[in-house]
Amino acid sequence: MADKEGNVLAKDYGIGIAPPERPFPVKGHASAGWGMQSRLGQIFADDGRTIMLAFDHGYIMGSTAGLERLDLTIPPLMQYADCLMATRGALRTCIHANHHKAVALRCTADTSVLKDDMSFGNVGVEIEDAIRMNASCMAVQCFVGSAGELDSLRNLSYYVNMGERFAIPVLGVVAVGKEMERTTRYFSLATRLLAETGAHIIKTYYCDNFEQVTAACPVPIVIAGGKKIPERDALEMAYRAVNEGAAGVDMGRNVLQAAAPKAMLRAIRMVVHENATPEAAYHAYELWQKDVD
Image 1 (tube, one colour):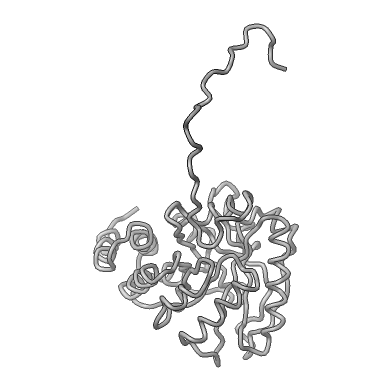
Image 2 (cartoon, rainbow, N blue to C red):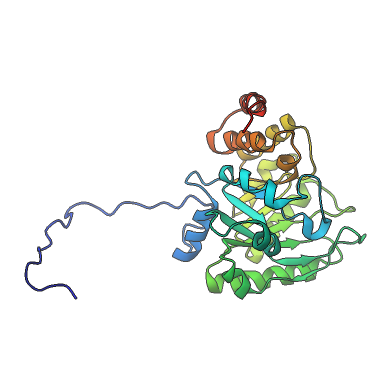
């Protein structure tokens, strides 16, 4: 209890000074609650953009090139990422709990690559475990246009309902199967559908006329890196995406399978957060590639 005697009376009330405006940089969430904004603010930097480092491939693909030893590969890269996208098993066994990075927790349990139709998934992580894992958001795989569409949208709705209850945003992931088209029309439909179902962030692929996809989606879109492509091409894709409305990138194989993963992630950071051109970022990548840690 404060002492009654010797207490200095308050005197600086800032009378006549308006409270500072506090604009929220994440698209579509200016009116979200404090807890939801706090978690979104962990994922997105003050410029409204994010770099997610994805290493959740093993939950459907098994051991993948560049991701054989997550405990050795991921920690040196984390300082250049804003958010880690991973499964709870990978986080618990390979990443120290004091990493201080946002976490996009893969929450659905989905079909492996051994199946021809990978569109059937289930709720894998209950909300209590997402809270215990201190998830910044919950990632949900969705298969719009596939046989398992309705089941995946039911999973998404479950996580949106739980996320709204506990102020944890949901990342809706647009999955593209072997037989599914990769067109502007399809991605415009899928991203809008997931957003209107309640997803707070969308992960999808870059495509032609991408600015139409981002313009029609009321929440942030981050692009998936997809399969490994040449480093220069990956930087070009990231540059075009953010300049056509994307709120960032979620790169996995295009970082982890690069000749110099740390240099590649630093170059991506130049593009996303410093508005560097692909040429400048690739030049920096070539210089950093020569560095020996």
